[in-house]
Image 1 (cartoon, rainbow, N blue to C red):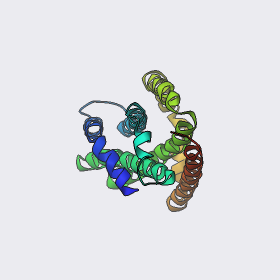
Image 2 (spheres, rainbow, N blue to C red; image 1 turned 60 degrees about the horizontal axis):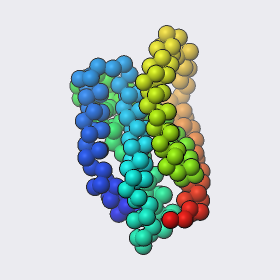
Image 3 (cartoon, rainbow, N blue to C red; image 1 turned 60 degrees about the vertical axis):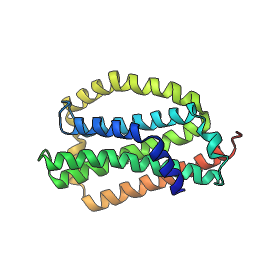
Image 4 (spheres, one colour; image 1 turned 135 degrees about the vertical axis):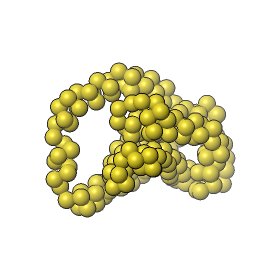
Length: 208
């Protein structure tokens, strides 16, 4: 399985490097934006679409299924690769902002955990839909995703800021931190496990 992860890393190294540079530019405000970690999260999500589109164009599924690996291992490798890549992008942004004094280490850790939770939930939805619907989902999904980023997301963020996120930051801050994080981690792990099992089942039924 780790060999498959390494294969994706080597094949997409230029794309990863490009996304990493853009991540640093946003995180350090060299490209000035509001809520840079939110933008980085969107970049991580866009990376998943771009990676899936690359696999479809290169017919990677045919190559992978000719190797002495199981389909369960293929799906597992995809989950590991994208969770690790997302953590790399978000962690890179958080570390850069901490080193530049833009946020405290505690705030960086907290925001990294929350951002990774959102991305993981996104991945848990993305992969079953991708393995169930195939390339058409990626083609349509990329258009919808980028239209959303360019139009709906900025509007929704401004509305949320105007209403102080409807008191959610204060509510979260009032809750005990450790139990909250444990509950969030447990729910995220459970969702990811269910998503993985569904993806394995869907991919096992495909013929190449």
